[in-house]
Length: 364
Image (cartoon, rainbow, N blue to C red; front, side, top):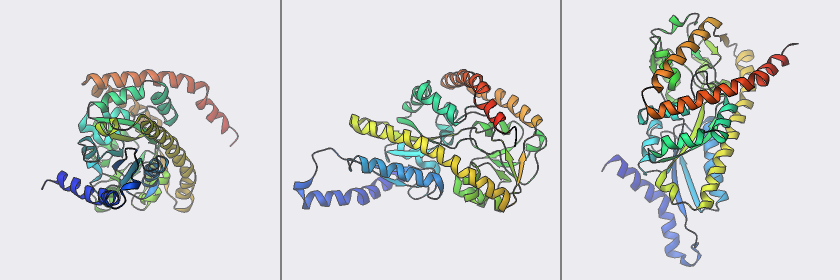
């Protein structure tokens, strides 16, 4: 029996057995509405903000639909491995998944651009691009080709620059490091001779402890504190040039999506939009407390990338990402649209967010 057939058989037995028994013994109380039972799989483990948040999203859809759309979530490695989530949803073995687009780089050359680009959108700008620019249309252009429907379902906000056990004073210090960094930021580090490794969350700390990798970026203070990265690395670098506001996604098998009524589709869409806002705000709130704890209680060494390193990273990022985008028509369309919107955002932010934040700390 193949792995896919085994998963389908196991799911059918556990999820549909109870429903079948009910229809046999209580035939008069079966609802006339068509009910859907979905299995959702996540690239993230159960613990932490993302595990709780995506469980809440599935539970709320089930509750609000009054069971018309029942979603059961399996976290990473509970049913399939973290990076197998995309495959089982694409094939229709499962119906819904959670991750970040750059986890699926091998599926489409354009897909990583949807997680964000180095020195790209922050969380507020990305939301504006998705909901009021061309973001959602372009994202679904990518995902529909893969038999999937795409929704933004969360955002990490601005991330930190990573955990290291050596200081980074020149871009040449990246050479030879075994470092976990997914997405386009990882491609930039590769150009400096970094051995970039893609690992799911549960494997990160063991990999550093064993020496498999030398360091990692993860998300930000709250998630990093929860994962215990301060126990295995000496230096905590900022800012997160590689991921200024990373998109977290919900992806849905397109055939399963098309079977839903218009009302259920609207419910899923609204629930994902709520999740997108709630996860971003929770990360921000928890980071406020976690950054103080890491600094004051655990005496973590916070290190800012110097201006020279940041300028060189920005220049190299523009070169590397442009070269990647030029290889594929859809990637180029996405990249050009992102850059166009980013230029407008930078122009507005100069008069709003940037100068306001500088003004707010003048007397501190």
